[in-house]
Picture 1 (cartoon, rainbow, N blue to C red):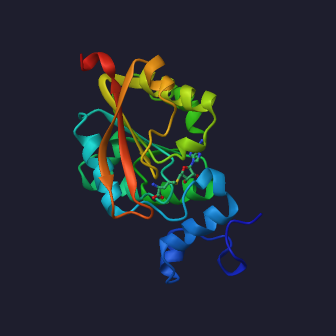
Picture 2: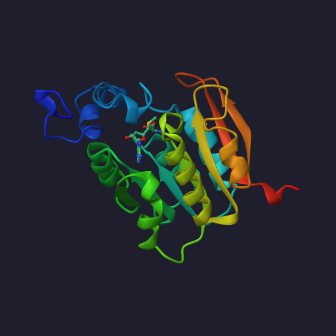
Length: 213
Ligand SMILES: C[S@@+](CC[C@H](N)C(=O)[O-])C[C@H]1O[C@@H](n2cnc3c(N)ncnc32)[C@H](O)[C@@H]1O
């Protein structure tokens, strides 16, 4: 199935949607029509949610920041605006059209088109870089148990001792069963509730529990 309607086929989904007068939200909605499970939302994250995620990521330290499921780049932009230089960013996006668009927009960042559950393999290319935050826009709640476990395990294998994994979700509940963070020795807590998002979102912060006896 083609990514864009006929009159827009072959052009960048985000930039050219903007240039054609259609908002980026239209491009995102079109993605949702085609890949509802993987896209996981009908509209991009709001700037309010994006800024909340960026604040949490920046206060985790000045190491590398990995963004998983960057979509249209709203959170990526908020990270850059909050002072995370593109060189400190590794962005993972599974959707080829969105990854291509991110590559054009954030030319100095490392953009990997791939599955976030393979993050360990991607990071092997960037050995030695300390990761202070992993910011996830993934529809984690729709992942199966094994994928949820693998993603969190691999993420904390990469994160510095005081590193954070940040995940937003649309319901009030933790987006993974409680046994997963328990088994991995993690503590999960609500860092923020963002009303001005469609739909309103909760931002969860995962950290190593032993840092908080
Ligand atoms: C809810 S959207 C992200 C919204 C993003 N914050 C924005 O405002 O555009 C989820 C994104 O995760 C991507 N995604 C879903 N599963 C993925 C996976 N396993 N690995 C990497 N990206 C994935 C989707 O393609 C989509 O762009």
